[in-house]
Length: 114
Image 1 (cartoon, rainbow, N blue to C red):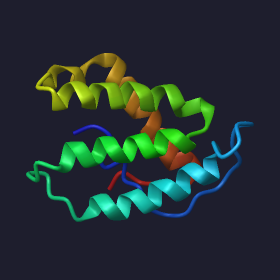
Image 2 (tube, helix red, strand yellow):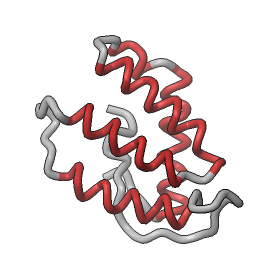
Image 3 (cartoon, rainbow, N blue to C red):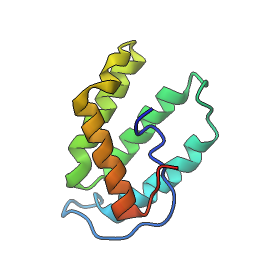
C-alpha cells in the first residue's frame, strides 16, 4: 500500500521552513521515532490504520510547509479508508501526494522505502 510505512529509517539532513518546529530536521526525527512504533504492527492488525493515521498526524505537526499539504491529502484518504472507502487510497491526487512524500523522505532524510 502506497506510503503507509514511508520507509522511515536513517538519518536526516537539511534545513526546513520558517515555521517554528516545522523543519526537515524535526520531521526526520519524528519519522524515525514513529517508524519504530509502526515496525511491530503486522499488516493484518486491525490497529494498523488507526496507528498509521495517528503517526501521520504527528508528522503533520512538524512537517515543513513544502510537504504539509501532501500529508493532509494522505491523512484524509486514510480517514476515508478507515470509514470503508478504500477507493480514496488509489485516487491520483493521493498517489501523487504519496510519491512526493516518498521523494522527500529519500532526498531530505535519507529514508528508503524498503
